[in-house]
Image (cartoon, rainbow, N blue to C red; front, side, top):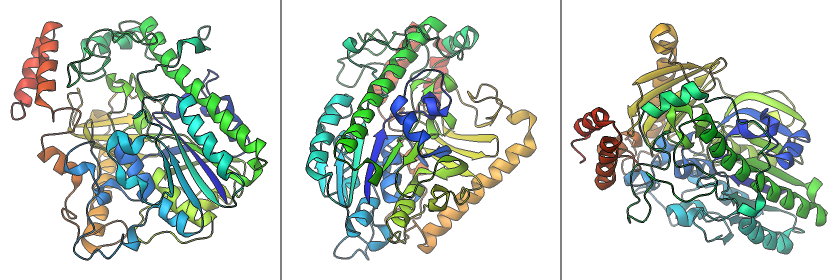
Length: 507
């Protein structure tokens, strides 16, 4: 089977037309959805970028691989341990390795390994074409590398090509010559002026008032507290008009990327293999766009950061919509089943191939999401509920326990925890049961767990906290000190005083 996986960084599901968005951001992806299967509740298990793609390629939860952060001990996979053999343990083969063993030519077009030092994701790839921009390259540059690979290999019988686009990720720098296809379209109604006024009073990385981060970058080259000189983004979000400029930048990046998704599909047509190719479109994580007073970043274990699109079209895929709960790490055993090979014994994922064939939904009862790079959180998603448990706030204004009715409040504006103790108890029970099951697997060496690995019996989220907190929040004291100074300079001294006391051990 030929498989093309289109990996769209920072693409939240509800900004695609096929997921109900009013703007025409994704005509090419929408056409794929019309001819294939769209999954409405598909989530990355571990957030954001490095943990997410590690889980995708390994088929394992971060609590098992050890990768939940962007720096420190929890940013690299745990070693197999003293029983490691001559090569990688077959239990923990990666998705690309399984595909390659089954006779597929595997190729990656992405700068992700370089951006994050994530060399482990290359395991199983026969070809790697580094697009060279460390995540700042545009879709035309990525397409150029993918086009060359397809020209050379499209006619091969079995291959897996993974193409990584970055345009929905900040800094929203789609070429000015592309214009703004949405300048005549209204912006989303939320956040409205009232919500933005409340956000303006708040604080935290990528909040309305600190839109571009918390202080200067480590080399002092960019003052993120001022206008970064980007044409498509405001310096701050003080009004709905500012938000319109901001969200236009995000949506234009999506549309620009979608144009090149269309080019990839057209190339499959030119080679006469479109109908024989399984095309998959998804993302590593979503993006908060005002939720939790976070704009254009991915700090949480919740709906906007955790939920990602999944559209699949091609051989073995029916036409329809699947509303079951699935993890992105479920894709590995699904693809293994589709090509007629066995999943690795150490994978945590569960195949949903039956759902693709139109034989009924095969979703999970609930999902648990983990975030360890910008905050330390776990979220439980079930029925219409999201329970969010915060262990380290990452300089944000979170309650320890938050509960949201996602159906009624998709932007998570009203914490219902105080009024629904029974629902909080149910969410907490599910979280604790999930954690006990994963740690039990770690102790017994079942599924993705490995007791022989150094730290294999420790929850990596607590390792992050022991190191001083998430990499992007408090692991760099000089950055934290700069942000405290900024808060005091912008009439938020009481917040600075509280944070200084809260994080005195890392300053």
